Amino acid sequence: MLSKTTLFLFFPVPFMLPRMQVDKGAIRFVLSGANIMCPGLTSPGAKMTRLDAERVVAVMAEGKEHAVAVGLTKMSSDEMQVYISLYLLKTLIHVAAKVAKQ
Image 1 (cartoon, rainbow, N blue to C red):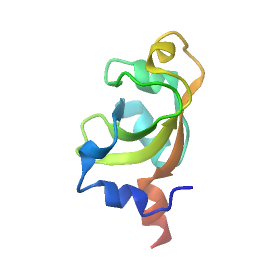
Image 2: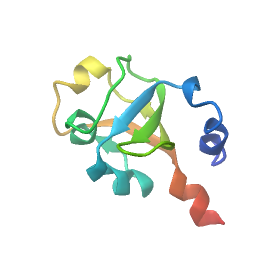
Image 3: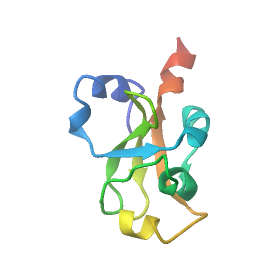
C-alpha cells in the first residue's frame, strides 16, 4: 500500500507516472478521497492517457499544476470511453489526507 508521503515525493518528478486529468467538478470529491467516476475523466475538461487496466497513475486537476492524487486504473482507457456511470480509477492517496493529519 502507498504511504501518505508518496504523493509529495512525486511532486519533484511528475513525469514518473502516466497522467489522468479530472475536470473541475471532480476536484473536491478527489480531494476528499473519492474514487473517480467516468464523467470526471471523460468530460471536456478532462484528459486521459492511453493505458491498460491496473496501472498506477498521477491524478491531475483541470487548471492545477500539481497532482492531487495517485490512483489505480480499474479498466483500460479504451473501455473508459464506453462506460458512463462506473468508477474508473481507485484513489490510493490524495493531497488532503496528508494535510488533514498535520
